[in-house]
Amino acid sequence: MTTQTVEAPRSARAAQRSTNYEKWGWIYMRASGLLLVVLVFGHLFINLLASEGGVKAIDFAFVAGKWASPFWQVYDTLLLWLALIHGTNGMRTIVNDYVSKPTVRKVLLVTLLVSTVVLLVLGTLVIYTFDPCPANAPADLLPSFCSAG
Image (spheres, rainbow, N blue to C red):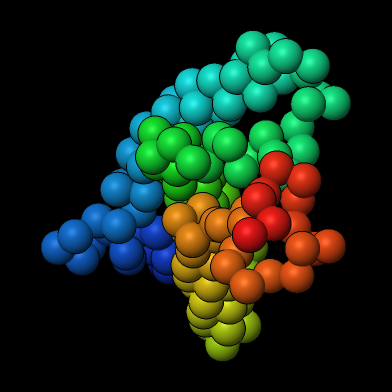
């Protein structure tokens, strides 16, 4: 009778490192998921129920007015970062679980990382640099609430 040795799964090999990134990823998913539930329901409540007019009231002016407040800038930035990193971590887990070829896995993980960084930077820039009434813009392109001068 011969005995066969089964190779340890990738996650078990990763657990032998001094820092267990899988454990911290798991903890992040639970903590961010809980915080995201609160933030998303708060976002929906404020934007849909508490604002006068419901969904029909959400337009360019609504967003401009909301992002004029530093509180809403931080709130939406937190929502953006938590949701995007939460989703990226989930996709990373799926790639690690189902892609067996190391080269393909590495390409997918790098692509995931680059796209996440680009979206985080662009989203954060939009939130903090948003100006509904830019200087020297043609008057016909400005929203009605901007002064023409």
